[in-house]
Length: 156
Image (tube, rainbow, N blue to C red; front, side, top):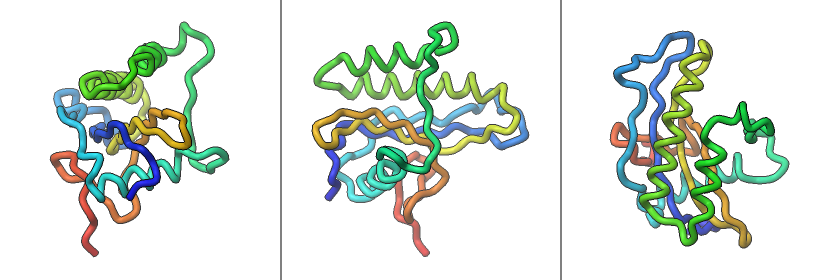
């Protein structure tokens, strides 16, 4: 059982190979539904990314919003609007995840060395605090992502 209280979780895919331009007709693979937060494999995936990225003092790379509003793009405002709605709801969660994916594409298309991957969006609570964690993964802790963007146990 997960030690976190998962409110919403979804996986999308940003499709790009490093050192190549996007296939602009096939930029991303977006889910239209949330993952089942009670599924053990989904919980394992979320626990893994939260353990890696969602703790203070971790060694993983993380990003913050730029302080200059003219350089921020739309994501900080999207985030502030999303977090102001309580309780959170599925429609708003899926919407913000897709909007962030579109912004990730816009940013990555100008970066030659950027590559794609699976992007896990998780709205969760831990120790009384609410978080929205956005992480790009390749594979994690024995979990892989299917073509339909469902986490699956890796078979060794």
